Length: 457
Image (cartoon, rainbow, N blue to C red; front, side, top):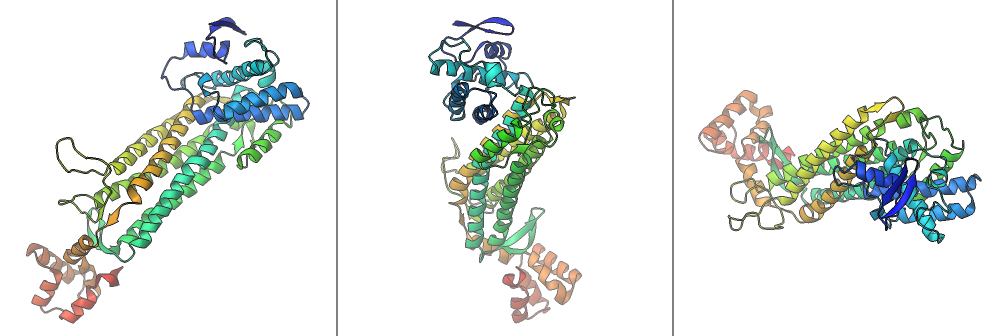
């Protein structure tokens, strides 16, 4: 151990740790979940510190020498090289002050290493006066939240959703000629093609892409520059705009200074909106996954209109059993996402006066949702959607036996008469054709024309 000091006095810190006294206090105060802040959040915090140092140097507030050290250390954080030095638990101070000071101390101590000074000396860089210059935890942490989640949406979730949307659209085109029976209320309905059915799933994913894109745009306002309560005390008037410009150039996402800093720090409504979109995406994915495993149910006592790739044995006792495990995995991830999204909604309510005090948990919930959804969707696409096959013969058999083809009889014999024929066919276990011919209602040629499934799609 080594001795470091902060405003509260001395603190023993692990010898090899780059963090300091304030971080160690948080480690001791919050041994709660064992979950540190999300990796992407920490990397984005490094990016924020890097941009802030550049701007402070440009504004003449920070020497070129200090800026150089801060920028290098901050870049190392942004590149994930120093992540092991961020041990603070998610369940910490609600403003994220512990994580902000964690970054400030790591950068200052790394600067000391680079300058061949002793760790903890605060030479040549001071964690508060230099690394945190023009900033407060109350604006830097909400800004990092927006930056990190926006990057996760852009780099992880959107590519996965686009991949699934394209795969579903491909299946829709491949299966456009396969006629099957439709189902509403889980009961037989009029025919459609398997391609038409999957075009609906493809469109759901296209809309999911649109929702994720809206979420990304929702996060483009940053709280940076508001400092303690939104007034911007101790921050240069041009600091926020210049930081946003640098981040825009670095990420390709159009970040801008918040229109109202008091809203940007007191409310987390933007994150609640993002959680709502993630929840909607999860609902869409659940619908698709459940439909697919129902369509593939069997192989002898289910629907079996499609078959899924066998990825692993499905039972420890039933030989040869194969289960729709990729669908089940995705459904579980979506249920998890719904829970996390609801957590964000609850957190969004807990801002009193000038600050929301649940930011670390919001960051964890949003990043966990995006990470799990992104990975699950990608795996589901590759190991399920891309390899599943249609069973045209089974689809045709269901169409031929369906009584809902009677719907096409309505214009010719009326609803009541068509309903009676359908009921009789069901009770006598006959086809519609057989009943129509027995009762001499239509000729065989007329039946061929009226009950042609292809004319119903």
